[in-house]
Each structure stands twice: as C-alpha cells, then as structure tokens.
Image (cartoon, rainbow, N blue to C red):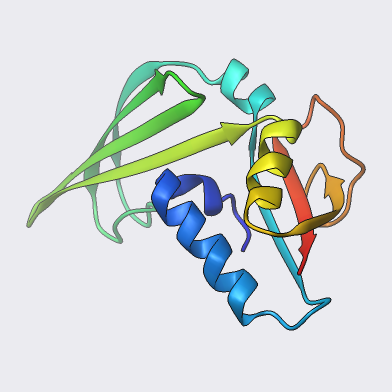
Length: 141
C-alpha cells in the first residue's frame, strides 16, 4: 500500500485495513506501506492558491480553475482541499493525511498484532532518518 494512502484513512478505517491484511496473510506473510512523517507535517504550509490550467492538468483534460486550500490540524493531520471548476462542472476533493512519528506508526502496527521487520525512509528501502518526508514499514504476521 504505497503513496501514503494509509494516512489518508480515518483511524477506524486504518484499524480495519490492518485487521483485514493481518487476517488474509499467512503466518510469516509481509505487508509494506508508507505514511507521511512528522517532518512532513512540520514543513506543511497553510495556504490558499488559485490557478487556471489551460489543458492536460491533473484534474481535467480541458481548461479549468483550481482553488487549493491547505490546512493543518491537531494530531498531525493535514488537508489539501481542491475546488475544480470547469466549463461543465464543479467538483471538490478532500485529501486528508495523518502524519506519523516512527514510534506512533510502530505502536499502531503492533497493536494490530504485527511484528515490525523494518522501518525505512521510503518504500524502495532507503535507510530511515528523521528528515525524511515519509516513513515506510514492513510488517510481518
């Protein structure tokens, strides 16, 4: 589970994911995922940005306006909110993220029954350091 999708889930859904993964793994099976680190949370900037994209933007193929609001919340939670307005529609996207310390991530994994096999700076196995914007863990059933 990569691209920090785990931290985008609510606390209840994170518990559900860990339980389901644990239940579906064979003994000795492994699970790899990453999250944003506290370093990412600390460097997160609250801001509001407006932009007009002519074509081939992330959200639409044709021209659209993008209104982006970035907010920081307690308990290491961030929100990137996008309002996308095109000629034919308007949509809102909420990208929530929970950021973790290494200790908090390990605790959450162990509470679900997993053994932590390794902690890294990213899913490619770069050694963990506190300056990394992400933390990746390999868990074992």
